Every structure is written in structure tokens, then in C-alpha cells.
Image (tube, rainbow, N blue to C red; front, top):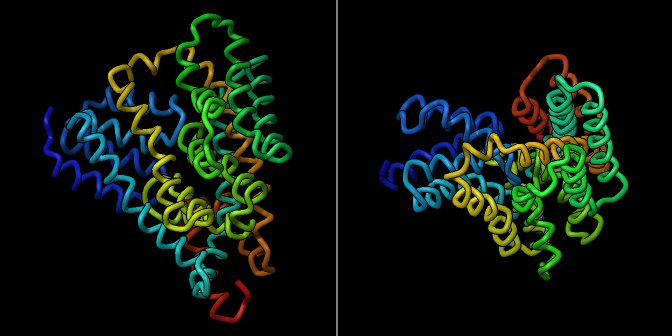
Amino acid sequence: MDVPLSTVLREWGRIGVIGFGGPPAHVALLRDLCVERERWIDDVEFEDANAACGLLPGPASTQLAIYCAHRVAGVPGALVGGAAFVLPGLALIILLAATALGEGAPGWVLAIGAGAGAAVVPVVAEAGLGLTRTALDGLRGWRLARATAYLAAGAAAVLALGILVVAVLVACGLAELAVRRIGPRLRVVGVQAWPVVLAAASALGPLTWTAFKVGALSYGGGFVIIPLMQADAVEVNGWMTNAEFLNAVAFGQLTPGPVVHTVAVVGYAAGGLGGALLASLVAFAPSFALVMALAPRFHGLRANRTARAFLDGAGPAAIGAILGAAVLLLEGVRETWQWPLLAAAAAALLLARRTPLEVLVGGLVVGLVAWALGAPV
């Protein structure tokens, strides 16, 4: 198949612009384009690719976008399509970071961050709870006990160990492999745990290492980037306050495209525009490299017991880390008016069944109203 690069640029760029709502929206848009409308990829191959991306470290919907572009236009298509998918939201979030983190930031921008930031805490918690139900569904006996232990380990790592979250995720994955006695068939573990090996062998700077963790070890969905960044950004390196980090998470949810864009705000806080671009490049590079290297083997990867076993350990630990991160995000809620907003957002999610995007936009509006009425932001 040889789809023109101009078509790839246009269609993947369109998804990058309108891709609000996180990975489920991205998968739906890619499926509509590649399977339903243009019939470039059949339904079975698309589902295999989506499942295989879920087994890889890194942002799954970004990897699926790269895979689909690679499938229709080869390596040039993967590069063009992946960039077109990522860049619209990235440009917007860097603009927001420059405005919110610069000197004399406009009050309305701070109000957006404060309002959406309060609303994003229950969004993260609800995502963690939903992933927990999915991860534990159908498990019985010792498998349920192990998965629960991995969840607890991930949460405890975020709350008590901070920067050692990565080690805990990998340790849980390796523990599940050991339990299933896969023994010498550990080739896929090289794919899963390669960030730790590279980090041990390379003198990576703090921002580079933080971004690399985000791009290469975010098992279990986009929200895993929060615990992977928070300790580095707030406690260890002091690039941001808790409130600024909370705003960054909110900006990442409000902008189109992958949630991994949040790393650009952390990069901007650490080193201005250059830091934002460096962090983004490092965070997204593993997705391009993994997909282009493994695309021909995606069908086999989905059925690989080693990859599945590792993710059955690391995945629940990552979900526990999300739940722990939701607790830590509360430290960024500093104004009195944000607490009833947080409670209202939780009620809207859990009782009224509103979508995360609707809740975040509602928080944004409340923040602007509070600022207009003279409330501190």
C-alpha cells in the first residue's frame, strides 16, 4: 500500500487537532479513518495492532497512530503521521505552559489551571478505579491475590518511595514472570525493561531521564505518566510547585492528542522552551522506535506469553501508581473554593456519569467565574 504522504499529513493532522478525550477517542478516530472509511486496514489487523500497542511500554494511542501510518505509507508515513498526530496538541500545551509559567501570567490562565486542576483530581482517581476493575475482572485465587499485591505495591511506591516507582513497576512485572516460570524465554523482557538498562548504562540528565520514563515505561495507560513525573518535578528537582504540577496535568487533559503532552509543561518549567522541546522529543522517541522496529511482529506480540505475563505484573502496579498519584495531587489544591469544585467534579463523574472532558471543561468555567468574582487563583 502506498498512500501519499500528503494524505497521511492531512488525515493524521486532523486527528491530532480534534483528538480530545484521550486514548479511547484516538482509537475510535483511527479506526473510523483506516478501517471504516478508507479500508486501508482490515478490522482484525486493527484490533491486533491495538492490543499489541497495549503490551508495549509508552503511550498506546500514539503508538497505534504511528503503526497505522507505517502500515499505509511505510517508514516515511510513520514519521509524518506520528508527527502530525502529536504536534498540534504539543504546540498548544507549550503555549499554555509559556503563558502560565511565565512572569506576570494572566489571571484568566491561572484560573483555567486552578479550576481544571481541581476537577482533574477525581478524573485521575476515577480512571485508576476503572482500570482497577478491568485489571481484576475475572481473576480468582492466587492470580487475584498477586494482582492486588501489585496494585498495592504501585500505590505504596508513589506515596512512600517517589522516584523509585520505575523500579517497582519493573519488579512487579518480573515477579509475575517468575511465578509463571517462563524461565529462559525472556527476550520480550528486553523490550519491556529496556529503560532501566539504558538508564543504568547512560549518564542521562534529570529532565532527559524524567521524559524517558514517561515515554518508555508508562504501562497501563496515559495517566501513569503522573506518578512517573511528580516526584522528579516537584520534590527532587524543584522545577514546579504542587499547584503548578496539578495545572500541568489539567492542561494535558484539556488539549487534544496524547496525554503525554503533559511532559512538555514539566520541561518548560525545567528549562524554558528548549526544555519543553527536549522533554517532548525524548518522551515520544521510544514510541516511534518501538513501533517501526516491531510493526512486522505485532500479531505475534499480541499472543506472546512472556509479554502478557510481564504486563500482568507491571500493569496492576502502574494502576496502583495512578491511585497513589491521585492522593498526591491533592497537595496542589490550595484555595478554599477548589474543594467544593473537586467534590462536584467527583459527583459529576461517579453519579451523573459525565465524561472526563465535560468535567474538566466545567472546572475550567468555574475557575474563570471564581477569578472574575475576585477569588484567589
